[in-house]
Image (cartoon, rainbow, N blue to C red):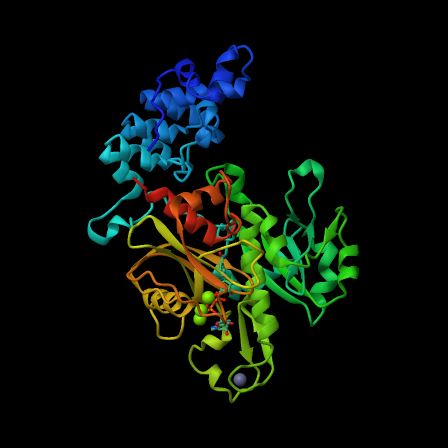
Length: 477
Ligand SMILES: NC(=O)C1=CN([C@@H]2O[C@H](COP(=O)(O)OP(=O)(O)OC[C@H]3O[C@@H](n4cnc5c(N)ncnc54)[C@H](O)[C@@H]3O)[C@@H](O)[C@H]2O)C=CC1
Ligand SMILES: [Mg+2]
Ligand SMILES: [Mg+2]
Ligand SMILES: [Mg+2]
Ligand SMILES: [Zn+2]
């Protein structure tokens, strides 16, 4: 294994490789203020100066994953030099522990190589036995795309008709417009960083739609307060958000919006992944509830018509004789489909099992996944789906994190699993090919290193995050 030796000052650090030699020719005057700050931050981490590291993070939080001229992050430098308190501080600020240096080493690899076991343990929380290939829980919980909750759902208000009505006409209330389950968005302009944004409407622009019987109105929640102690917040309620599902012609709906470049995305699987994290969370909630309404127009128990209640979170049967009106019936509430998605690790700990469906773009491989069946535990669903799709037998299963997937309403539960057998025999009806990929090959594909032999799904998918997670906690020493 090749490991670059460690330097303790920015000057010495820059002397090491090609990039660094180039940097060494630079005088500090030529460095931008930002670059200089990054170098000082990295230097503090390498020296174990936790006070200075904390000060830099407070001043410029984005510095946390920067690599500077050495190609090493602060976490790697602190891990190299055995500075436990700096590693702890960086992790508590949510640093990315999956990043690799030019030798494909994570901070975990580096800590392990230099014998800082207390740090490698902190980075992986490895247990004994089979956990050699299956490290345990994350230091900080992982947040996946579609998972962020910017709204407080206030489910207790769903039955408060007076409060809801007052919010309908409140000038601060935000309405989102959906047509055929897709939100109206303004497509990226050159000057806004390429982000798709939700079109937000006020009451005056949509009040006629609210009167139409075919319109579905969902109360999504109120904005979470960013600074709850501020005195003006105490008297003023934060804005409420609603989603409107309309059956009006999409072209007519678009005319209501004053923003430029508005549309209803044609390909949700692609276009809904371009929102910012907060808006993605709102879309996950709204789209799944609206899709439930579109698929469950009639009572699943007796086939009668239903009425929409509880601000869009319930459909009650209009047939007074119906069984669904006695007791609590899950047919009356929005559905969620549990799905397991798993990163299967080879018994040698250094390869993972990825598969591709026929519909995937050429060259793309992903984690295996499948719906949980009734009366089945997560662990059993993982074992069954992996064996069905690849013929590989799985032993221990660890839950990592989950992701709501609003196409239309899945909850993807991400797991790591250890294989007990290695022969592959794919279920050709679902999977075109499944293979064991060595860690180095996965790193090359993930970080676009040398000669990637395959591609992985985009960062917004939990599949991508599970693969990164494995790279971050599993060393190939
Ligand atoms: N976010 C991510 O990273 C990923 C998300 N996914 C999602 O996971 C879901 C499940 O993965 P698959 O491999 O397709 O599952 P799967 O391996 O269970 O096979 C799907 C088949 O199972 C049947 N099925 C059983 N229960 C079903 C239900 N409740 N809804 C629909 N079909 C059901 C259908 O015949 C369907 O064709 C997919 O909807 C896909 O969108 C899949 C991979 C990655
Ligand atoms: Mg599957
Ligand atoms: Mg399957
Ligand atoms: Mg299945
Ligand atoms: Zn009924």
